[in-house]
Amino acid sequence: MTDSRPLPLKEALAQACREIEQSIDRLLPPVSGDESLLIEAMRYAALNGGKRLRGFLVLETAALFGADHDAALRVAASVEFLHAYSLVHDDLPAMDDDDLRRGKPSTHKKFNEAFAILAGDALQTRAFEVLLEPATQADPTIRAHLALALAQASGAAGMVGGQVIDIRGEGRALPLEQVQRLHALKTGALIRYAAEAGAILGGAAEDDPRRLAIRAYGDDLGTAFQVADDVLDSTASTEELGKTAGKDEDASKSNYVSLLGIDGARAEARRLSTQARDALSSFGPRAETLRSLADYFVERRS
Amino acid sequence: MTDSRPLPLKEALAQACREIEQSIDRLLPPVSGDESLLIEAMRYAALNGGKRLRGFLVLETAALFGADHDAALRVAASVEFLHAYSLVHDDLPAMDDDDLRRGKPSTHKKFNEAFAILAGDALQTRAFEVLLEPATQADPTIRAHLALALAQASGAAGMVGGQVIDIRGEGRALPLEQVQRLHALKTGALIRYAAEAGAILGGAAEDDPRRLAIRAYGDDLGTAFQVADDVLDSTASTEELGKTAGKDEDASKSNYVSLLGIDGARAEARRLSTQARDALSSFGPRAETLRSLADYFVERRS
Image 1 (cartoon, rainbow over the protein chains, first blue to last red):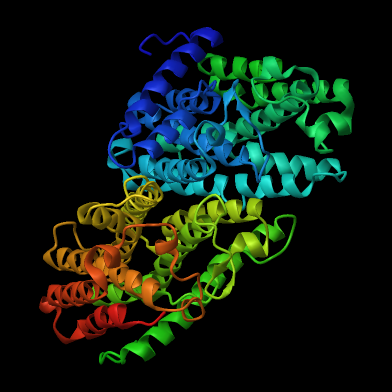
Image 2 (image 1 turned 135 degrees about the vertical axis):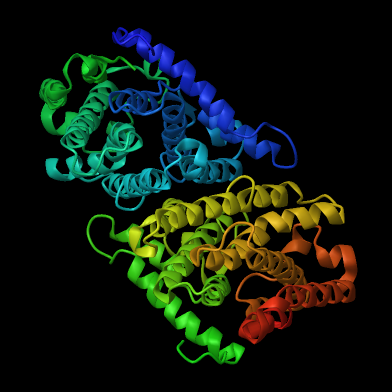
C-alpha cells in the first residue's frame, strides 16, 4: 500500500480479500470453552469465502481519505460481520429457507437453527463492538459516528426494514418505486455505509463534498449491484451462483428483471455504474480502482 | 425527582415503569409504511408489560451519579430493547419454544417466526443506535463507552455466550461452577450493565471506587435474581409466572434448585442480596431504593 499507483482491480480485490479474512480471523475469539460451538458457527458464517466487496469498499475509501490501513481492516471486518449475520438469518427456514450459501451448507444446515440464530445475533453484536473498541480509532467521536451510521444502515430503517418489505412483496406485483426502495434499504444501505465508512474513519465531516461524492457513489453502486444480482438470478445456474438460482421467480417476487426485462435491467445496471463512476470525478486517478469496481459490480458472473 | 428523599420501592418502581414505557414508545418508530408489521412486532415485543427492572436500575444509578434524567430514560429504553430482543429470540421454536411470555402469546405466536427473528434483530440494532445518538449524551466518549459496554455484556462473551452454555447443558448435569458461569453470562451481564450504565452516563471513570461498588452490587444482584428465578420456576404456577413454569425440570437442566435444593437456593439468594446491599454502604441513604431492590429481587412472586 506504499506504492501510490493503484493495483489492477482483480489483484487489489484478491489482496484485500486475504487481508480482510485475516482481520476477521483475528477479531473473532478462538474456538474453545463451553461456547466453542457458538464460536465455530460464527467463524463458519463469517469466514465462508465471500468476495468481501463491502470490506474492499471500506479499504479503498479509507485509503482515499487518508485513514490508517489497520484501522480500516477492523472496520472492513465489522461490515463483513454485519453482512454475515444478515445472510445467516436470511437463510433460516422461517425466512428464505436456503440450504446453500456460496456452494456450502448454510449455517443452520451445518449446525442447527438455534446456533444459526445465536451466531447471527452475536455477529451483529461483534460488528458494533469492533467499531467501538479504542483500537479502531483513538478519537471516540469517530468511533461513535461509525457505529451510529452502521446502526442506521442496518436496522428497521435500513437493511432489516428492506428485508421486511421483501417478505411482504412475495406473491404480489410491486411497482418499480417500491422495488427500488426495497433494495435501497435491503442491500443498498450497507453498501453505501461501507463506502462512507472509510470517509468517516478518515475524519471527513458530514457535509464534506468529498464525503458526499462517496455517498453518491455508494448509492449508485448499491443499486447497480442489486440490478445486476437480479439479472444473474434469472440467467445463471445454481452451480455458478453457489446459491439457489431462480428464487425470485419461484417466490413470484417483483424484481428489476420482471419489471424492466433482461435487456432493460442490463441497461439500467450499466447506467448506474456509469453514474457511480461519474460521482468520483473529483478524486482523479487515485479513485481508479473504485471506478473499475463499479464496472465489476455489473459484469460479475457470480 | 427533585425531592431528595427516596420513594418507597413499589412507588419508585411503578413510576419508573411508566416513564420507561413512555421512553420506549417515543424511541420506536410509529406503525406506518411498508415496514409497519415489523414496527408492530418490535413494539409488541418491547411494550409487553415487563417489570422494567433493568431500566429501573439504570435510572437509579444514574441519579446516584448525577446523570441527566432524560438521558437516563434513553439508556433505560436501550437496555430494555436489548432485553426484549433476547426474549423474542429465546422464545423461538428452535430455541426454548415458548408460546407464552408474560401471560400473552410470544412474538412468533402473535406474528410469525420470520417477523420475530427480524423484530429481535432490529431491537438489538436499535439498542445500540439509541445509545449512540447525540441526544443521549453530548460527550461522544461516554456514548461510545456506553455502547461498547453493552456489546461486551450481550455478545458471545456475555448474554449470547450464556444462552449457548444453557442450551448445551440440557439433559446433562452441570457442576455448580458451570451453572454460576452460565448465569453470570446469560442474565448477570446485562443486569450488571444496567447498574453500571448509570455510572458511565454520569461520567464515572472505570476505576472510580463508587463505580466499582455499583459493579459489585450489579454482579450480586444478577446472581440473586437468577437463583430466585430458579426457586420461582420450581414453586410457582404457570399462571402466576405468566410464562411456562417447571421448564428447567422438563428439559433436565441443572439449576440452583437442583444443585442446592429449595432451602439451599433460598438461603443463597438471601446471602447474595445481603452482599449486594453491603456493596452500597459508601452511598449512604441515597442508595436506599437500590438496597430495597436487592430484597425485592429475592422476594418477588413473579
